[in-house]
Image (tube, rainbow, N blue to C red; front, side, top):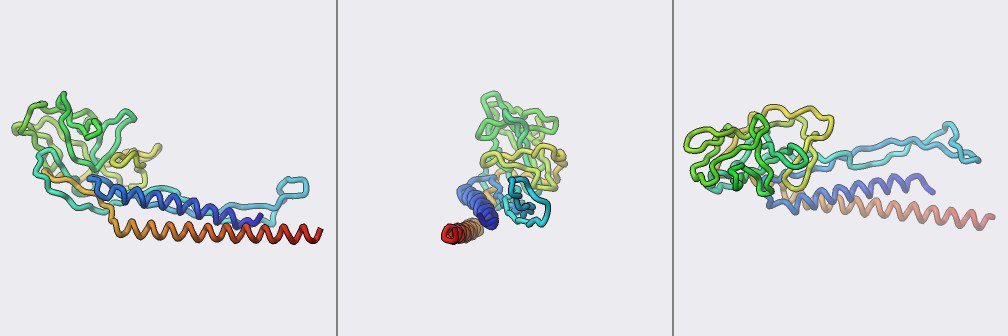
Length: 252
């Protein structure tokens, strides 16, 4: 079998992964707080040696085979537009910052700022995950309070008194974040802890998705055409192998 078929196959798999990423971006173009992903490709060099008559690998000459793969997903860090809501507990993160929340799986990070008040007064996401303060504890307000506000520095105030401060962190290298669902990200194992953030919060507004539908559609078309090209290459290698096999059979 031709070695090139494996390189073409790796390209097809990589383009399918890119297509999935772009399609997910388009599906969340209207999700407030969503950060688009970009597929990061990597070329892998593998050395292949010709097998000996007994099946054991022989020493060089060897051939360097090139494969491609999606090595990581990098969050898009470009700013997203804000939507004014007039709601006191809606906050939009402005700048390089992420809000910290507690989930059953551990601390996660989000740009979604539609704060809700749970029955016990805890400030939570729509999913029920509590927002955390600088000490890693949930923030609580009076459940029936109507004068709860959030300051630009994340200070949560009730009746003018500060009851907590939303924790904002930054990631100089966005590739250390791994997506969990549409709005949550986790820190990749072994990565450095997040740094302090200089971002601010805009109250009465929500950060929308930073997905560009036009750019995402271009990526979908590009990934589709790339997959089709790899598919044609695979078919060409298969046909070449079939012709070679028929010639060998005819010569036997």
